[in-house]
Amino acid sequence: MSLRPAGSRKRYDDPILPLINIVFLLLIFFMLAGRIAATDPFDLKPPQSISEAGDDPDLMIVQFGQGGEVAIDGEIIAIEALDRALEARLSADPPSGARIKAHGAATALDVIELIARLGDAGIKDLKLMTVARQP
Amino acid sequence: MPPSSPPHSLARSPGKKRPLVSLTPLIDVVFILLVFFMLVSSFADWRTIDVTPPLAASGQSQGFTGAVLIEVQAGGQIRLSGEILALDQVADRLKRLIDDAPDRRFIVKTSESVRLQDLVDVLDRLAVAGAADIAFARAEGAG
Image 1: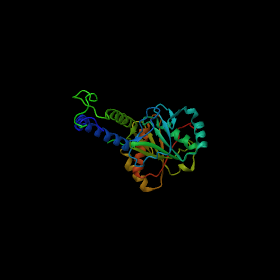
Image 2 (image 1 turned 90 degrees about the vertical axis):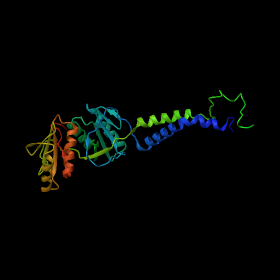
Image 3 (image 1 turned 120 degrees about the vertical axis):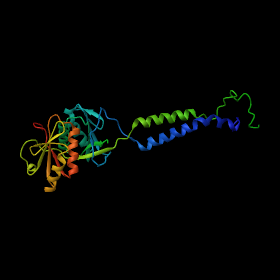
Image 4 (image 1 turned 30 degrees about the vertical axis):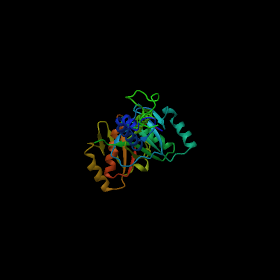
């Protein structure tokens, strides 16, 4: 039950209603269109590629920074400890594959070495993550 | 009580009447949610390239016979069967090689200073040319 005249609320809310509408629309847009992804532990600008194959978010992710930093699923590990970390990970929950998210300016030989070590650890299905080429 | 005349004690300043439920906290929360989703969501268009673990650097394994060696060098140059080519020239050569033998194996070898982006560019050209069997050569002296 309102104790105020019926007209007062309308007059007060009127100017901000369009603002709220737009903010709501923006909110819904970002909720639906964006994908919430874990941030990388270090700066990662993946290489650009014209590859068409899509991403598989279920696979575990191995990050590789420009300076040779390595992280598994966002957890930074020393490169010397990589084999042990992979072994522990594989024995706990054998992944069907792994995605490699490496910096585009990282040394290619280091990335190939990383691919080799993942292969040696027994991960069969390896994917190198890229972003779509910018026009 | 007629709604047009509220008791004087309940009404605030006559010119600035507030509604029963203020919208301001709601707008605050919606703004905070909006900022959160704007910062957290990513719009990157992720793609993947399937890679196979590399071969050993040395030793004549059976995998090498009949394979074409592509050496990626710094500055976007490619050495294909002894000849140094620019990235743009390589597409035709690859196409001819693949027309010759569709299941030909390509061994991609990179030199020390090559960045991953250069390697991915070469992999793109190979994929466009239709190469199905791409292997990496492991660095000399590694594993």
